Length: 240
Ligand code: BV8
Image 1: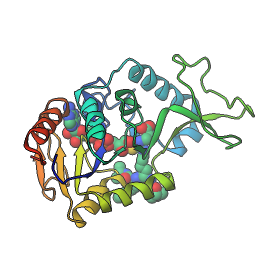
Image 2 (image 1 turned 180 degrees about the vertical axis):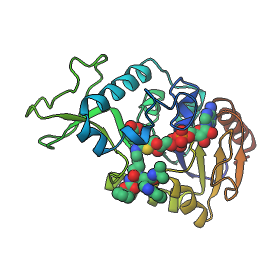
Image 3 (image 1 turned 90 degrees about the horizontal axis):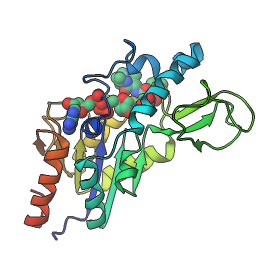
């Protein structure tokens, strides 16, 4: 195995598309004609928490029926092979954990966790589907509960963000898989890696705002392209 030891990965909704999870900007990204940006905001939740929870309940039941695909599984295998491997995800679907990945940085939270709107207690895991009541309430103080995700206009968890930037400053190779590279600050991470002379590979069937800047673009779908790319790495002893 080559000298390449530290690898960072950034994933977006595209890596879960072949598992049946709708992407945000692709086919099926709309719910009852609402865009994600309309519902995934603190304002939408304040205005109509029931409506926002109905959207999350719909996504939970959809995601709950999905399994990791070959791209998720390839990343779990890569982690087992490489000394330094950090998986940074924008996805809230939890499919990386299901695939066996360990070293995961969730930038935008997780749809299977909830937290109290009064922050009276730490966030908790809740995998009930269907939800017994909408909107769900905090089991400790009875206040409204909210999904433990980052909404537009909200800051990302400080520790996760610091770790993500640090890892991208240090990595030798970065894989950017299934993201439209539009949503900030996540979309800046590949640029940080490039600025630190990392070899950055983008896996996406479509061009994105970073496609011109990266070291290598791999088209096609992640579930086909990533395992093939990884097998070539294993065979050739260094990144293809
Ligand atoms: C913040 C959790 C500080 C919730 C999410 C103007 C300029 C710059 C920034 C801003 C701006 N105005 C506002 C902002 C800030 C805003 C932002 O970036 N907005 C964008 C829309 C311009 N960012 C924020 O608000 C962030 N917070 O900045 O705080 C602050 C505070 C106040 C004011 C200013 C700043 C918080 C962002 C996080 C929001 N939460 N998710 C939930 O899920 O319910 S974001 C959510 O959408 C996802 O997590 C993900 O990050 C994003 C969707 O992007 P992708 O994952 O890339 O998915 P997408 O559908 O777009 O693309 C899929 C890609 O896959 C495509 O390229 C497609 O070709 C490809 N694909 C499809 N199939 C496949 C495939 N690839 C491979 N294989 C396939 N089979």
